[in-house]
Amino acid sequence: MNITVLTGAGISAESGIKTFRDSNGLWENHDIMEVASPQGWQKNPELVLDFYNQRRELLHQVHPNKAHLDLALLQQKHNVQIITQNVDDLHERAGSSNVLHLHGELFKARSTGNPNYIVSWKKDLNIGDTCPDGYQLRPHIVWFGEAVPMMDNAIKIIENTDILIIVGTSLQVYPAAGLMQYAPFRSKLYYIDPNPAIESTKNIKVINEKASTGVKKAITELNL
Ligand code: APR
Picture 1 (cartoon, rainbow, N blue to C red):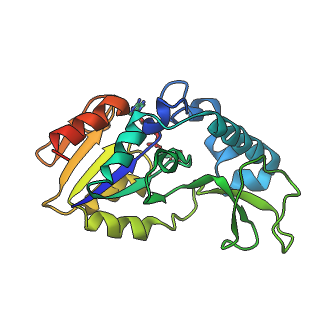
Picture 2: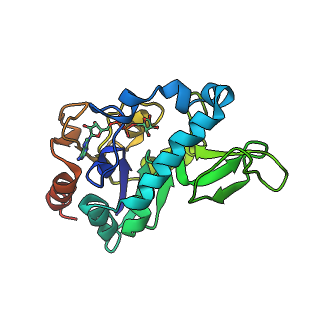
């Protein structure tokens, strides 16, 4: 059975990583366009690097929670593909093998001169940190206004899924938010979020709970 899990910031909330759009979320305290857009990077790269250095520093201090761990366990019995909007590595640390990062990865840096030069980067990233060709490195993050290169792969995965479980996303950011439209008609859809963006219909079951309990509930209801 093919199981696809689409996750957003909410799955990492109980690990201690702030979501973006909840009250006191990241975008309440930062101007999106200043820190997460190509224009912001052109205008003030130090500010952008500082923002992601803080995120990276925090990521070193947190751990996967029960929801990440329960999803990782699922792959013992099923073919599980995680598609995450998150730039943290908590799914990987929980043990999930197949993780597609739609919006990039905090622990990677990329050359501003060669988009194919991508390296592991766990410390602060500063002005003057360059690739071997001398180009400044930038966070390996998909910023607002940029293409989402992994989208085609994500669509193919969802088109072949038997079950789609969506966890902890406000479904505000496209194209990621449109991915569920690609789930086959016969597939089963679950959406777990304590403040869900949509209501249950005959096509999708909404579990109005935090990820730590909601994921377990979905796994039990689906008999996985
Ligand atoms: N368990 C599950 N869901 C939770 C929890 C929790 N403990 N706490 C909060 N949530 C839910 C909120 O109710 C909300 O629906 O997580 C969701 C977080 O929404 P956003 O902050 O908008 O995060 P996300 O949907 O992942 O954002 C998408 O926006 O700026 C970007 O690139 C960034 O990937 C991100 C994208």
